[in-house]
Length: 110
Image 1 (cartoon, helix red, strand yellow):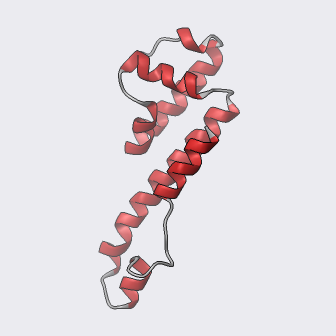
Image 2: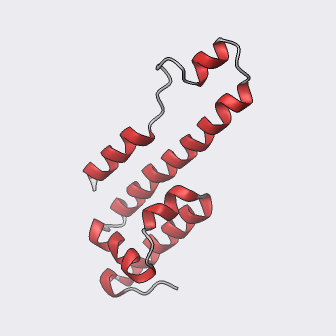
């Protein structure tokens, strides 16, 4: 799971220092809102990803447990986390239910 998190973090992590990023473009005269709003959305997505993995690890879930969600729903739980705050909340609820169920592999999704 740690390797997966590191790989995703590299893809999602902001790169403020690179030429052409929002800071450089605004300094060059671009408008603030169009430059920084997409960055805000990206940062929220990255934060949800990071906290999801912390929660799963804290609850003792393994990649196989998270894979069980896919088996039960046909959709990766990580996709739900990345797409919205509602998906993130769903993931945290599922983690808590999986932790309480104990036998994670046999847990059913509502």
